[in-house]
Image (cartoon, rainbow, N blue to C red):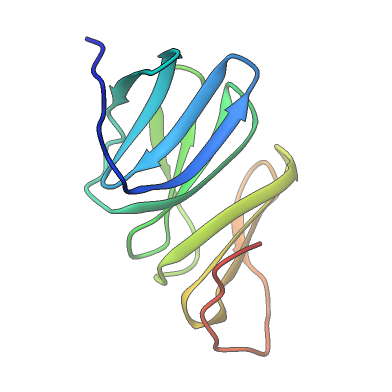
Length: 130
C-alpha cells in the first residue's frame, strides 16, 4: 500500500538511481513515484538516524541503541551484528566492502563486506558524521 508520509523529521536520505530511501523517525520509507512514499518494515523499533548505500540492493541504516545497523538487500531489511553497544549516528562507505559507522563515545565501526569490527580511536566525543 502506498502512503503519503507527511513529516518534518526526515533525518537521512539517499538517492541511488531509481531508489530513494529516507530515514523517517521511527520508520524507513522509499519513494516509488514523485511525492509518493511507501513505508518499509525495518524489523526494529530503534530510531534510525543515518542511511547510506552503494546500490539499490546494498543500503545500510544506523541509529537507535546497542549498535543498531540494518542492511537492505533490495527486498528486505535485516539486522546486522556490530561490536558496539553505542548509538550510531551516521554511516558512509566507498564500496559495499568498505563501510564506516560512527556515533556515541567516539565509536567507529568498519564493515569489510563480511563483518563489522571496532576501529581504535583516542576520542570519547560523540561522532555525528563520517
